[in-house]
Length: 68
Image 1 (spheres, rainbow, N blue to C red):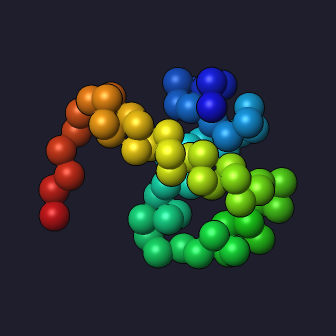
Image 2: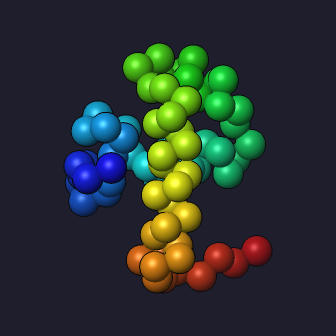
């Protein structure tokens, strides 16, 4: 996911960010509903976004603590 949109990584160079996908998943949205809302995405795009987010969190890129 090398392309960026306003400094944020995107899905396959499209104008949808990894953050957007991760936020949908975190809010409890289903993969099917995300794919309906963004028909140009594929299931593998969502998986790639989650993998990227996991790697970013593990590498220390995501430095803001989660507060609950």
